[in-house]
Image (cartoon, rainbow, N blue to C red; front, side):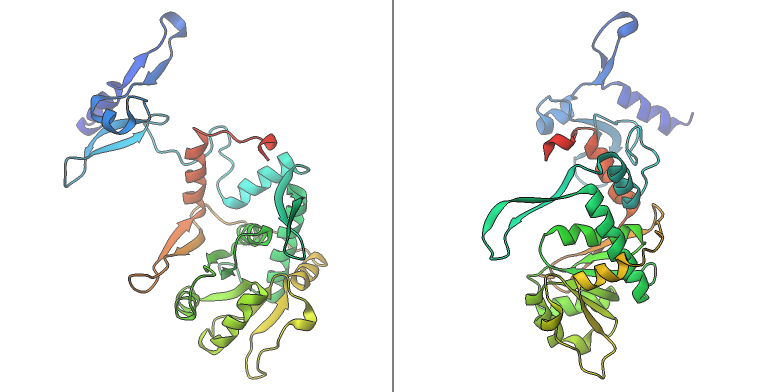
Length: 300
């Protein structure tokens, strides 16, 4: 064992104390004096031997996993991508409540109307199949230009199942920032609400990468057409759903290292910057959180 490895093990072992004697001894991490000012002796973190290059700050790692970074769910190493994650949830909780809305057609708030995991899975497959049928290639960027609602989650699941890259577009973005992100990410499809469509059409000629605009909640008779000189097409979410539902396509599962999403900043101090996150990144994030938080179907 090299010296650096011995040093790491020595420091980490200094945090470990036995809580019971004999054969039933269990070990847990105790809060070190250097960590106490941050975790108040709760044992949330352990100090590693490394130091930051500048300043007096220590490097910490979760007390739940002091020896290695968590990258996969404990007990479920087969879940390596967002697609794997949803497939597992779908198989386990198919008939359980998943996505709920409580806004009526007239805009008032009512009781929750639920979509089950199984129903969401069908919608995911239909939307993804519709995109494949339209000719959208694996690895293409899909823009989500609307606020939180079930369709947002369904489109994101479709992106994971068919190896597309989701790119959120904040509805508060102005035309300049939205146009910049669309061109920078080479977005080919944009999902939006009817109220965002007019904004998109105002700069449609400056976003040549866009081939398809999908309007959520709109009706076919109220969907405007693009100029005949343009090659873009506008369809409703329900139309794309019907098209995909009538001809389901096989999944095109991503790899853990494949890009899952690109999250852009708002661009308040310059042009928006995109943070590229892989499927492996997001699964590691969820897996690490699962060490401290447990979720159950009854939580909904």
